[in-house]
Image (cartoon, rainbow, N blue to C red; front, side, top):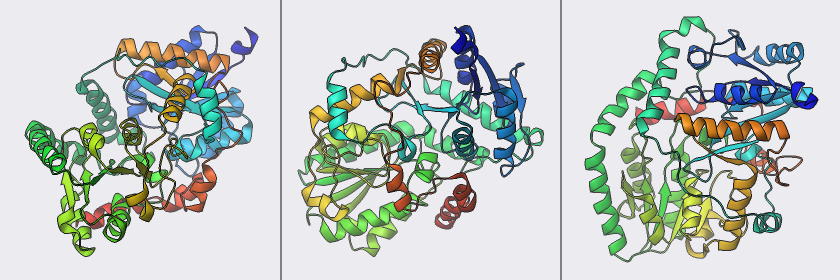
Length: 449
C-alpha cells in the first residue's frame, strides 16, 4: 500500500519497558517506517536499535531540534505516551505546525486491560466530544464492551520496568546531561519511601477495611474524596491546583459551610502513595482551621468501591476513579478537567450546591459513553506482559495505519474542554509550562517542612 509505505512514524517516550518498540515493530510489519528519539538513559535501555537517535540538548532547544528532525526524516506521525510531559507538549505544537498526525496513549479509562489511544492529547486537550446528546446517539449504536480481564499481571512486572527506567536515568545521567526529569520526587528517595508502605500494606488494609465498615454502619451520610498521586502529571498539568492541598482546602471549606451537619468527609489515600506527602497533618490542619476536625476522616487502604457504593457523593480532581464512582451510581463532582465530566453524568452545579443537590448519573448515558470510548479511543491490552503488549500493539498499529483513531465520529476539530482549562489558568502550552515549572515542587516541599 503506497499510503502505508509513505508513513514515517516517530516515537518519543513510551511507558518504561519495550511497549513503544512493540508498536513500532507492528507498524513496520504493516509496511510503515518508524524512528525513535531517546531523551534519556531509561529510553535507551528500552529501545536502542538502528531506528533510534539520541537528543542531548536542552528542553528549551527541543522544539527547534525536533522541527528540523521531522522535516529531514519526512515524519508523518508523532506518537508519545503521557501527553503533558513537557517534551510531548512541544511535540504536539511542532506537529500541528508541520501538519503531522500526533497521537498519544496512556493507561485506559475503562481498566483493567485497556489502553487509551487518541489524537493530540487527553483531558483538557482531548478531542473526544463533550456533547451528551452526540455521545448518547453514537454510543447507543455500538456493541457491548468486552469486559473480560485477559491480561492480568503481578505488580512486580510494572515495578521492575519503572525502577529500571528511573535508576538508569540516575546512574547514567551524564549520558544525557541536559535531560529534564518529569518527576516530582527523586527516584531513589521515592523508592526508599515506598519500602515501609509495602511492608505494612496488609496491616494497613485490614485496619482501613474496619474503618470503612464503621463509616458505613453508622448510616450517617458521607462524601468520598479519593486522593490522586501528587506526582501524577495529569494532576499537575490538567488541573488548576499546584498541590492537592489546595483542592482539599477548597473542598473542606465548602463542606464546612454547606454540607448537612451530620455528614462526614472521607479522604482516601491512593494505594500507590509513597508516604512523602504528610496527608494526616495536611488534612488535620485544614479541617481544624474550618472547624470540622471531627467530621473529616482519612482512610489509608481498603476497598474504594465499597465506600463509593454507600456514599452520598464523591469528589475528584480529574482521576479515572470518577468513572468508578459513576458506575457505583454515586453523585460525582469533578473539580478539574476530565473527559467524563458531562451534564447528565457528573454534577454541573457549584461545589457549594453539590453537598445537598448532587444527583445520580444517567445510567444510559454512562453506558453510551463507555461504548464510544471502547470503540474509538480504547484498545484491549496492557504494557507489562508479552501477550498484552503484542495484542495492544497490533490493534494500535492497525488504527494508526487505517486512520481510525477516535473513530467512529469521536474526533472534534478542536479540544472541546480547552476553553475551560484556559479560563481556570491551567498551563496549556509549552511556553507556559516552562514558566510554571517547579511550582508543584515548591508546594510539596513547603508542606513536608
